[in-house]
Length: 315
Image (tube, rainbow, N blue to C red; front, side, top):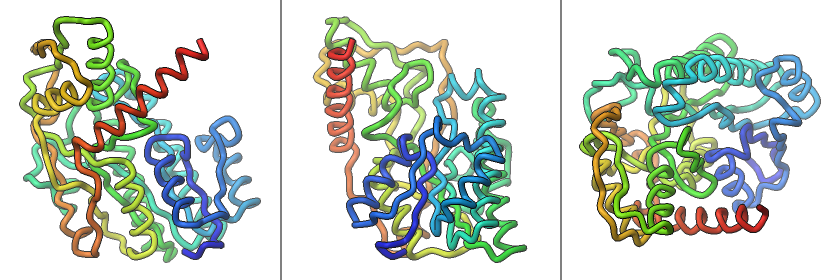
């Protein structure tokens, strides 16, 4: 990519897309093509085709997707598979048909089998059953990977597939009905602190192990790979560090300054017992993350507090 390259960031208002946009701007890319969902509905093939034909982006970061935590994935299964299949099918095909030089598709660590050997290597894909709670989302992402592979094989289209681990950071979704675990914990502990609540409930046993990557590190890796990686093989993007959900909750509580007690709600599911990515392929290319978990949680909490203050003032 050159500073004058025409770059389309699909999903630039989402967690990953907004971070990629920040990174591109920080690196001096000025010819950025952006559309809100209201301006361009990527689930509509005709709209997507018309956009690509008119704008002719050279590079595409495909970060647009319907995303959510366990609750949203498990209760809106049709929405997750339909919308993600439509978005990625329309964008990958339109990018190739309109001469894009390269496309980076953002997948997810949930593509791997529920009981995949840990840390999860890229070759674990399709070697076992998926986690049932997010299977429709995972199936859609796997289809996107296979479409990118097929377009590379048949048409020579330089489409790469990145598999990020659990992301967090500024711009995250803090809605308790649809958020992932880390932003949900930040909001729960913040609200408990403000209310002076004596306890905060934690779903499940707290024993599952999770890996987290700050979204600005993901953006750094995505731009790095767009420049330096051209292969049909998927590539993991992770921090290489894992933490139990219980320890994560305690860390969030400390960062927020909550002094009450954490209690477990054993009626709620744990989800996958362990999820750690093997990111050695990416490390071997010369990239590594730069933001530690406690530092990242602190910055994310400050962003959340400021956004809450803005909402309060507006209301």
